Image (tube, rainbow, N blue to C red; front, side, top):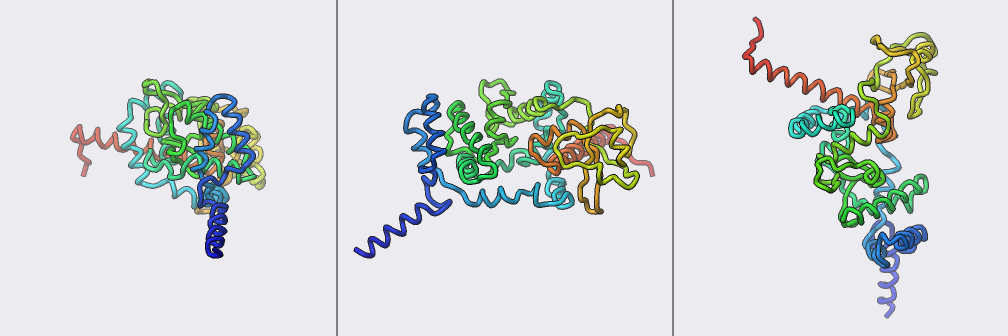
Amino acid sequence: MRKQIWQAGVAALAMTAPGVQAGDFSQYEELTAMIAQLEAEKVYAPGELAGIFDAVSRQDKILELIARPAEKSKEWKDYRPIFMTESRVKAGLDFWDQYRDVLTRAEKTYGVPASMILAILGVETKYGANKGGYKVIEALATLGLDYPPRAPFFRKELREFLVLSKQNGMNPLAVQGSYAGAMGFPQFMPSSWRRLAVDFDGDGRIDLINNPVDAIGSIANYFKANGWRAGEPVVVRALIQGQDYDNATSKELKTTTTLAELARQGLSPRAPLSLSGATPVSGIRLQGTNGGEFWIGFNNFYVITTYNRSILYAMAAHQLAEALELARKERDQALASATRGDRPLP
């Protein structure tokens, strides 16, 4: 009898251990309130969500990961090599060849360069090769209910995900994504999916998890909706002038000054630009392999940061886009030369 009582006590403790048992969130008042609201709105039938959350566990690994993202724990010199690799450029060219017409259509429709769309896919999921291995519902519940620094944001995303799952006929327990709850080829958060994803192949259904065509159109639509301006620059290297250039830089994720004012503070474009001195910009300092790197960011640079709120992320995406453009140009030139039968002169 004593042994049975002891075993029952161990089982009870196991049920309350973080991240190892189903039904971890059944007693959370915030989740109970969310379920009641979704039932009152007739999004879910009574008892349906309670049954779903019986199979949801808190994931302590996610709490560890959210506390040390690469964007905050690494300097530029260590962050850049993660994304700027030959294999990622090669895979990007292959993806570009496969979806050339779709990318061209997206660029014409939304004004966002095909290389920029590709770069987002490359940085986020290696063009769909790595969409994440965490259950989205567990990621969002863990962060929304047990991560106070950003709990309101992730609770909102959890609610959006539950509505999205019902609207799209998805099993909320089967959808996998990143540790932050981002999904599919483009790693959209649920609110972005519901607000900005598009049915780019016209099949009557938006599918960012399995359909790269919808993903391409949705990324382009996301950028346009967040203020991307076709034909405008993204970021350029700066020339240091004077002694007070450090005061000219900003860590804010928006333009904070103008080209003219930045020049007065000690940073100007290395190459001449045909832009007004009143053009909104910000000075940026990154820690590169040879010390400080200074850049000038324009509106489009900060549009990239709306996708992931990090200057490092935006710079990596921009430079991958440039690398893809260059590699495609060099490859096309080589193919054209081979077709013409050109031979190098001795």
